[in-house]
Image (cartoon, rainbow, N blue to C red; front, side, top):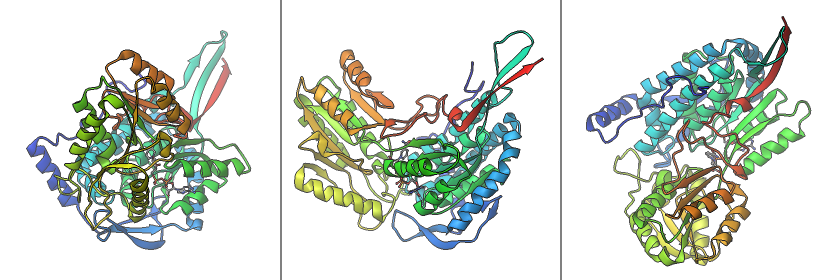
Length: 512
Ligand code: NAD
């Protein structure tokens, strides 16, 4: 059965190496640039009043990219009530109609790429190639879930039974789905959650990260324009307090959350303590992602893959490499190569096309990273402590060698790589310590020994394993993404089982 939709293809993206395409793209970004955007809570499609503040670019911490009007608690409650009213009409609409609206939205995203890419650069601090990759992922999510939903939410699956009976298994929307997303993929993760919940026939209340409301607001308006009724999709702007208020609302029938493990735990506790139906939580959270490198690995390839996995997007990917575990025999050589390549990375405002590492998201993120770096400078061996521009929220790439693997006990969300060495015969202990962390998001392995690769991959409960390549950039439909343990509940985004978790099942037996 073709769960992916006949003829569905991932978006072609943009070939940035092609000079004419690049110039056309930059012209579109410049033409769409504006500092007059305002993000507001949208209830039934209508912007709501709220306390207004500027949204500042992380590249300098001063330029206003636009403004946001944030919701208070009463406004958040009204959004859920409105979604509840809009639910049945959307749920009863034919699956093909819902999917067509999502596909139309994918087309609009591609047509307005100048606006979206510009916002990814200025509001989220992304380099152009990261922004292009993110737009492409967002488009892929929309088309992938739309194609799947047409099949899964159509007439239902006919089941075997005695003659004279028609037995069917149907999937239907749950009700009001709350989608809470992070700032690090403010378009792709935001739209991934929202499109899955909508495709499955839910009404949606979407709460984007407080750092990136503008891009979420533009994306929701495109979905409305594409045919998703304002009554089925509502946007609530604001920070974690507004998120917490929404989670506690009695009308919420399901929550999709992507963000930190700590907040996922809090949401889970609130849901568990509520009266009424048991509310499912889909949580996609953080990781202490490790890469195992043995003495047979190819040094140049390891160096390239480590630098990309640890420092691309300023290390602000949930999949990013945090802990490099390298065999003693080759450790000095590998570390030298990695440090040499990392030293060459250019930091700065990502609108400069030669920049490879942009800012971290805000002052708080920068301060948290600087505290971690200061602590390690006193307790670990410093291999690299790169300088960063003084204005804006920049942190230079750092490489530290830890005394003990267990010294890294929590996710560090930025361009900081931790290294440990292991001796021949000690691989089992390295794997024990990774397992003991409780996280299970991504894992890298570099080895030319099949037995070692098989042992590492089968031994660890890690959601996405990458062998002899970098460990970032999962592709929709090709590398379904998500972790286990402290890294998330599953199912995997961009995979065949995701949509079902947004739905309820119904069996209908008709005596014919
Ligand atoms: P965060 O947990 O601080 O915030 C995420 C979202 O939750 C934001 O919209 C925030 O406003 C909201 N929120 C905060 N407190 C809340 C509360 N008490 N109740 C309800 N909502 C609340 O995470 P972040 O800093 O935005 O994102 C970075 C984290 O996201 C990292 O840990 C990263 O690993 C993780 N992440 C995971 C994946 C994945 O697929 N597994 C993908 C991207 C990011």
